[in-house]
Image (cartoon, rainbow over all chains, first blue to last red; front, side, top):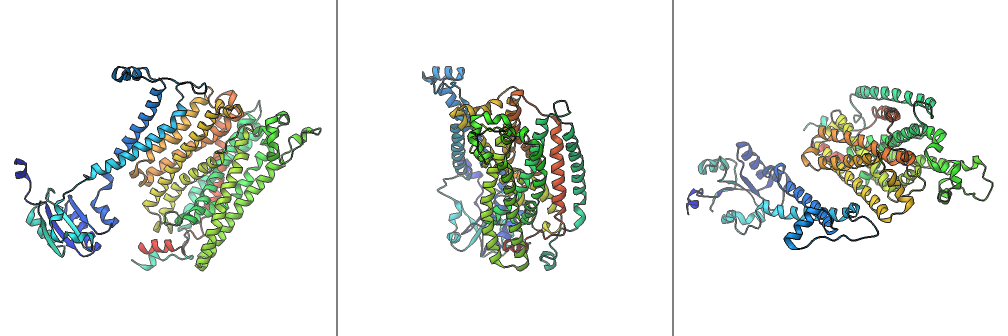
Length: 198
Length: 424
């Protein structure tokens, strides 16, 4: 339970706005105030606000996809070479591990290691692994699936799916201070400012 | 938002200051004079004992000519394409691209030295001994537009190739017709703002795009593929389009940087437009890789003598390393650079990548032609190659840039342009 003690008493402070313009201005103001850990909630996507809130430049998903693609390419090419009995160390390794090794087929008299014929499969596996790592990476980076989130403790938050716009400044932010942040948010003339319980 | 600043009409949508292009034009003219003088000197000094071999001379000229022609055609194809697709990203360059389309007549004249002196050098099917080649005889019905294997066949008849000349005229006629048709409709639209005219322009663009695709296919077969008349690839036309599109996109980047610093286009060209061009450059780089591999894979699997010989030449000592380098620098290097999103937002970096691709494109064109004509002699890269490339390029750029001042540079009546200007 020691962990619970270190946790700040609340998740953050939430402000409710009437329209996207107000929310956009609020996000801008909070950013220029130096708040970094904040989130915005809207009934529909507003690109400008997403750009302010999420720093796309530092998204790691693209790097995950690149690594996945490279893995797919290497796997596709090496697997085919292995299956055709190529790469002695690889053959020995699978032989000792599983008791299997590749077997070279004579296809139309071509050499066993016919790399041009390997390219289509290599390409397909690059795409497949890349696509999979994009989806899985997106889930992991977003922390999905997430069955519980503190913002739903706020009663009026239901309207985030209907006609209201919300911004939360999280207590994890180094600049966060319950009273000060609350006063700052009230200065942005929102409908309501609420503490978000854990 | 001040109205004076944002309202563009046909009266103030010209390049300002108009003499800003004088310096780049002067540099192009110097390049043109040096390059073309050297090319003209080479004409008299070519030959087995001369400074440059006849084959090298005409390959250099053909590549230089096709390279810059491809840029002009590619630019106009982007114009027709964005006419059809709509959207904001391509429309601000329309007027510049139309200017490039109309300038194609320069190349109709610049191609004449090949027709006059280079036919038998570059195209083995026009040589007298081709009359004894059964495989070529099967194709002469199309290539020469006449067939007569039965008669006495005097030598002049063997080298008589009306089909090539007729098609040459037809290609340029079609290109120039569509360039002028669409330009005049665009001009009419600027003056009247009548959306019916815009509709008509879109329809002509559809026909024009289709025609350009077909003509590029035939021209590619005539001017590049028939340098090895035995060989054939049905992917040649699409590849020709990729070369044209890629060089045109890359050529646009420095041009857009120049124009985005000057009125009137400074109001319209944004960072996102460079990103769009970067994305298309990446896409076409990938298409290049896709086509190159497909063609190779199909021919490699088929393993037919008249087809594999094309790759066999490119697999000999010297050419083999050249081939690997072309694939590496045409695909892997630009692919990995352009894959990074943040680099495409930086015009300066994108320009360097574009210039790099433009250089590699030349080596790819050379790779398409040169091994056909002296593949059995190993890799040959004569320094003379630079002169026709620089000369023809300089002359065209000098003429093309000279067409820009004094003309309406923004399609002012386009709804998306008005929208973009209103947004500031």
